[in-house]
Length: 305
Image (cartoon, rainbow, N blue to C red; front, side, top):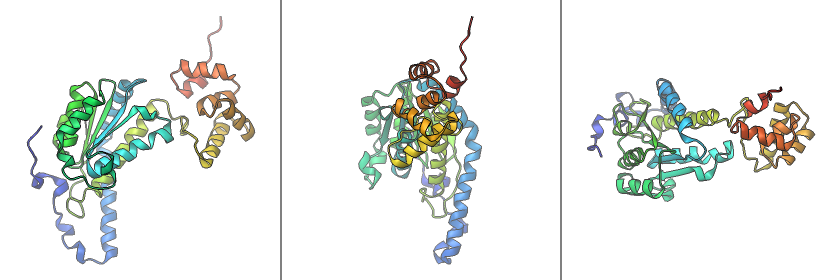
């Protein structure tokens, strides 16, 4: 692992002269400054978009039908990463068995600090081995400073095992970026409160993770015409959304959409094809033929002699 980086050299740890006396300001002014910082965080993501697009393209090719998304991080970065991954099964129907969370300190660290966990390189290395991380997997290593030993070890070990690795950090030249195959730098700079990377850096990291995972789901055919067509409808709100989605995309009434969903046992893509006039068996064949891509399935016209 790289030698420790002195905090004084990290932009995320610097004290900003502008906010030196923020504790003496009227709270309205302090809030305005903090909001400005959040807007700066959003702007810092734009220069990273080309690198992010390249990472998504590479991940979509690599992950296939068995690869996993592996999120590795510590502290705030780890919690943000877990949140992003946890939302993929209900939103996009991503299989839970194709998610792995490498959270320094384990899931206990989601709600409380686990002392020394972020420095435990051995734990990260061990988890990569025990989980059999391999060339089909995509590992996202997230650390605001880009110097967290646990996260760097996870990235380095996963890369050595053949996984596609993506490093997300807020300091140029950070060891985490150097360790990863794809480097996503979001240069958020000094925080309003020095070193409080749950603020600007945290916001920027959440945006990048949202963009990455949503972009990947789009590439994998889990979005059609701006809808979550692999969504799992598990409550009344989502049941209503599913009916409306089928009705809109198939151009039918709500009763037909409901019947199609019942026939397809809740599978939205199949229901849309059924409501569009296909028999269930034909709809299943079309989805299989086009690897789950609804757009291609709907557009398919068999060649006739």
